[in-house]
Amino acid sequence: MRKGYFITLEGPDGAGKTTQLQRLLTFAQQYGFETVNTREPGGTPVGDAVRGILLDPQYGEMIPLTEALLYAASRAQLVHEVIGPALDAGKVVICDRFIDSSLAYQAYGGELDFDFVLRTNVAAINGYMPDQTFILDLNPKEGLARRDASLADRMEQKSLAFHQRVREGFLALATRFPERIIVIAANRPVEDVFASIWENVGPALTALR
Ligand code: TYD
Image (tube, rainbow, N blue to C red):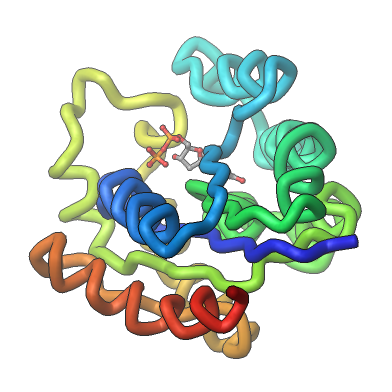
């Protein structure tokens, strides 16, 4: 039985998700929660192998459908091995990207059928939908500029138009699932971004104790 609390951080490459995840972890631990943090794609031996295929620039010919299935495969394994057991044990789980990345990147960015990507991923997550999702919203131009272009992975090498569709997709998801998703403006100092996140999740976490 699920007793913990599941938070996901979403947004474009370079929005600062990793920094915010670390802060959130520290705060949750200070409040006495046992925490688990993980990231997608990856987080399990099978998932890390799948991640290698997904991000390797040598597989430029990979079509969006293949991508969607591989991301979902990595997710299914992560839910089975890590996220599900941690939530069942009452832990706070914080994941860097989850189902909404597939909806934004593969359905909106890759222009796959939205309901297909949703159904595939609902199967992959086996009931473990996040309790709270934060989308760190940023203009893709700014996000990609924060990265070293010579180190861009296969996803980062996609066109600016792709990344603009991804951003629109994330914002559309927030409108579609308003009870779960909150959009946070990420083009602000790290402290301010974190204050907006904590303001929205702190009360729910403290209510758990
Ligand atoms: P990663 O290096 O983890 O990106 P970041 O540090 O920005 O989180 O690479 C993950 C890439 O995979 C990123 O470009 C987003 C993409 N992605 C999808 O397209 N679909 C998905 O379901 C997930 C989880 C990630």
